[in-house]
Length: 312
Image 1 (cartoon, rainbow, N blue to C red):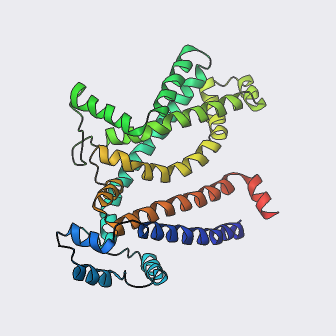
Image 2: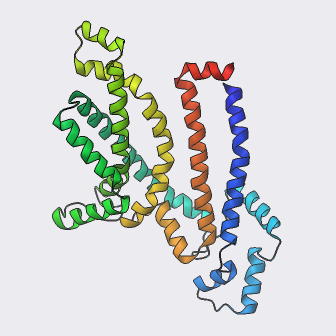
Image 3: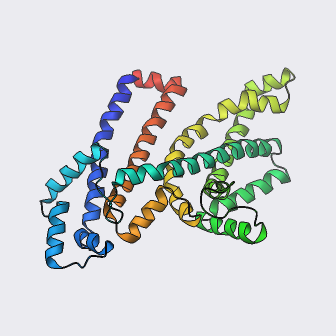
């Protein structure tokens, strides 16, 4: 198993290098000159002499390969350069915004877990009846609703219909509720359906018939016997949802003025702050690669059949 995980880490290295090269290349393909952008965002007249001097200071006058290797070597040391706008190290800007995004993603994850378990259990207990059908219709509609539209509806609800809830920022009590709920809505329906189908499948297995013959209640059977077996595939899917929660917070953070990584990236896009954009894209890509690796490791740890297949 350890050898297999080491091989997986080895295959990740070329992928990470390809992602870094694509990130660096896409920024360089922009029609705007980074040196001119750096001058304009700092209210400096972009004369030819000033542009030439700025290009030299930023290293843009060197060959493309030398620029990429220099940026990659600095990125490995978590040095992503200086922001064009704030003249602050990009690493510090990311470190300041990261806790807010982690707080938002963590709150959304707790909502997804609590809602999925409770609603899936309710659907299974009422399988085929009107509560089950109504819940599935509502969850389908919520899953199909775009995140930005759900966020705007919740903003209207908080600002007009129920003004007690804060509609923006991070400091007010309960400020996490609306953005976390907006971020979680797209996942709750998916995991409820996945858990419900798995639990109904396991309810038809012989070990459940034996548990009923022993006189165990349906709730105890669900929570003690069915859920641990039915929760395997949703748990694996949840591992890949963690990077999605952080990356998907980009829209939600801008709707609710949440000072996280997503809002930092959108601000950088409007200001054409290329070092911040490069660092954000690379960070999100690395999160997805690392999440994929952790999911593979979790599958091997939970399923002995996979471990036997790897060893053989």
